[in-house]
Image (cartoon, rainbow, N blue to C red; front, side, top):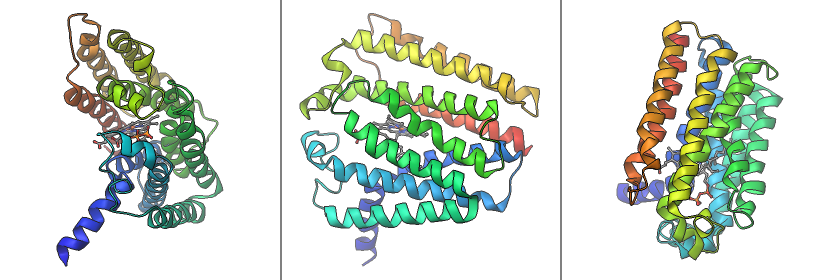
Length: 290
Ligand code: HEM
Ligand SMILES: CC(C)=CCC/C(C)=C/CC/C(C)=C/COP(=O)(O)OP(=O)(O)O
């Protein structure tokens, strides 16, 4: 009984990609903290609203892509292609999470966070997902999906959407999503090609993609280093932490330029870049809370 319930939850968590929806909600959490300059119990509303909407978007993405997911070893054990969840049930979860997420955002945080949440949803499922079949550069417009959730938090926390800090924050997350996707391509690009999804690996060599990834990593670091110019940290040490972390990011990934490096150690690289985003968010959070 308990085992059955757990395996149902596990399938749902893979359908809704909780492992990604949670960090996405964390960006909203961070946006809220800096938008309001403190913390309030109401932070739960934009964070849970974005988590639910992100879960709905991921479930819908897997309905949209179940045929290509079946063609890639990386994705063929996802719940729809594996037959664990029917498309009908996945659609029911999508509608339930999307309505609940939008309603929470609208009712508790206001129309603008709800609108931005829906815009992110439409961007991911209506623009990014179909673009993956048309261009190998879909991840660049796709970065908007990473840029909006922190802005939702910022606005829900009372921040002005027209404030330069909101724009700088969005830019950092926009640029930052691109290299973690390029890193994935270095590992799984050929699988994307097999499934008929446009992949940079069919146009560029791995050495070229590594260089491209490094350029985007430098751009990510630069956009982070510029943040203190737009957002007044409460403690000088926080700005130093952002600069040092960003310098370290570039130093760690300069190995991407080594022509002798046959294959990038994917797992540790992917983990490191995600750890960097996490530490930047922790820095923002601690700066407000301490
Ligand atoms: C704020 C937004 C985002 C955050 C915090 C984030 C973070 C993450 C994390 C932590 C993972 C690893 C998940 C795992 O270990 O299973 C991941 C995977 C991934 N991310 Fe992102 N990501 C974001 C936005 C994006 C965007 C906008 C794109 C593409 C345009 C993207 C592309 C991917 C892909 C393709 C994977 C692999 C997915 C999978 O295997 O299911 N991400 N992301
Ligand atoms: C508020 C709101 C709606 C937020 C949306 C957040 C969200 C769903 C982010 C998506 C991140 C992601 C995994 C993109 C990759 O999709 P992919 O299709 O390239 O991945 P795949 O190839 O593994 O299927």
